[in-house]
Image (tube, rainbow, N blue to C red; front, side):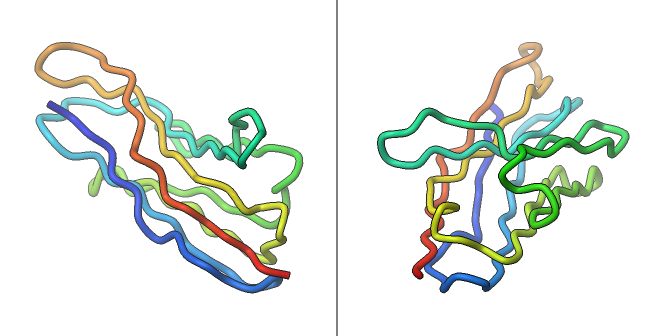
Amino acid sequence: QVQLVESGGGLVQAGESLRLSCTASGSIFEISAMRWDRQAPGNQREMVATISNGGTTRYGDSVKGRFAISRDNAKNTVYLQMNSLEPEDTAVYYCFAHIRGTTGWIATWGQGTQVTVSS
């Protein structure tokens, strides 16, 4: 069984930074593009950033220039560096990837990590 586990969330003030991590574990043969999504109370889940196996990145409009996604394939880990945080960034952040394990490809979500930005 494969799983994704996020860490690094917390409470910060506006203008500060946080770094989220998400690590895949289990019997893993391959991981697809990895993605960070977020969901604020009362809002739909939205894409924050994606990164391909080769390192190509894409960002949601609201975080361009402030957030940076990266991955360490050797560690099966994706990171999200969040700078110049704003109260509007307050949400639960989820990691997502398709992971190929012993039973084939599985769409896998992490449990989420809370990010709260105070003004």
